[in-house]
Image 1 (cartoon, rainbow, N blue to C red):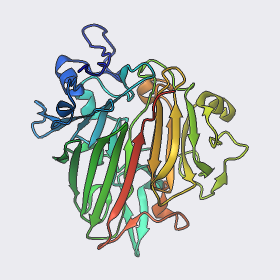
Image 2: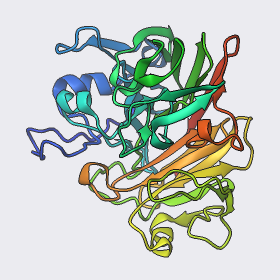
Image 3: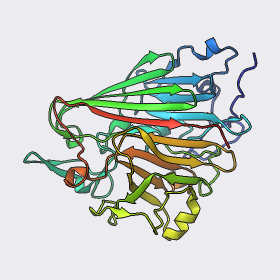
Image 4: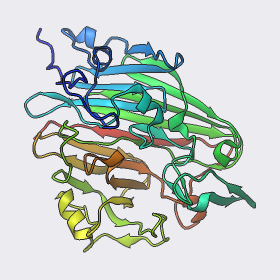
Amino acid sequence: MQGRPIAKLRTLESSPLPADEPLAHVTSVRKILLALCFCVTPSAEASEPARQPNPDHPSMKTFTLSHPSGIEATISSLGATLRTLSIPDRRGSLENILIGHHSEEHWQENTSFFGSSVGRYANRIAKGKFSLDGNTYTLATNNGANHLHGGKKGFDKVIWEAERTGEHSVKFSHLSPDGEEGYPGNLNVSIEFTIGDRSLSWKATATTDKPTPVNLTSHSYFSLSGDPSDSVLDHLLQINAKAYLPTDDTLIPTGEIAPVAGTPFDFTQPVPIGRKLAEKQGTFFDHNFVLNAPGNLSPAARLRDPGSGRILEVWSDQPGIQFYLGSPQGHKYSALCLEPQKYPDSPNRPEFPSSILRPGETYHHEILFKFPASE
């Protein structure tokens, strides 16, 4: 039986790159073996994911998941991070559609949160403060005067416990102690990745012993062309949202929920991202959109690359989705983020959907990435 096409990979030896350039391809023979599962029989494809210790961090593990439908992913216990995700284009060529780092040293720093599971609170909390049940809490500030993605040592910076939970799945667990980064309560968190038929799911749950804000998400940067040197401005984006959250100069929501109709934020129909950026007369997007069908797992966004024909659908059960387009580590418009989540600064906005988790409750959040047949 013929195996699936092998992804084209660029190695440091064959194509030297600047040390800080994000790289969508695996860059050493050892990582190639981790990132690829070239299988000749369906039974081999369903084998246990590879799991390798990292020599610099013995407790860190990397898992490789693959599925006969042609989807492959590598996931690290450092930050419960999705490092690579390879899908075929219209010709069947397998390419990694995420941008990331090419060295372990840069993965350990990962200041752009490439592929990380971020928390305890994804996105921003104004001035790093919130009040809850009569108490005021002060958080670490790491984005100017604001708190971003859990603070200076968020969930992206810790090594999670990891266990295989099925032929195509791996689960990560972490205890965030009371007071970490200023948050109240011991928070037990688990995140499970499952690879399926042209899909990858990310499921998070959490419990606490004190009331606390919780807002987790997956922070992957997508470039469907599979080439990190390409711009994503020609990608066609659709977001199932009739409203968005305007922000102040520090990207904190003003509290207004504004209609997207007639604005550069109208992605209700597929549109080239570059066209909307030109309408905005700005240099970036970093805004939360109010989804039309919160509470149920439903389509939140759809992205298509005309060149490769690859399609990404993002399904979510959360009330909002953050669309980010900018220059991660200086690489202008090389990728974009679509991050389902609760609204930014919800702990300070009682009119927003609540982000507070209380003892006896369980936080649930599911993201489903689907990859329909290429067009």
